[in-house]
Image (tube, rainbow, N blue to C red; front, top):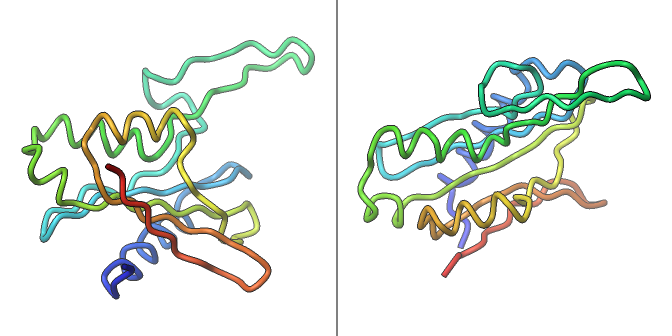
Length: 144
């Protein structure tokens, strides 16, 4: 069940996306919250600012393409760095929201690889934005 604090945290992610530099790209933001412990928000990387981002040569356009490090992966990296207990991680919530280059809210359901990582990390509650013809939706996913 979506709670008022969930809406506040989704809006916090959207605000971080608006303030973040996108380089004309889509912006996805993510944060983790358990009681008063907040990690993030972090944004997707599109530039070589993280050693985990590989560079792939694109010979057709004679430029390098950077593979993004997803925002939810950055949150999980920080969870590991802080060595939070599994109990806290299981009881916390991961929030994800996204914006287009023109600031339209996007569906930000995690990709299959991020979902595998989220499941392995023991995060049980996931809140993400979705959009349809009626506007913004906030969806909840309970992961067993």
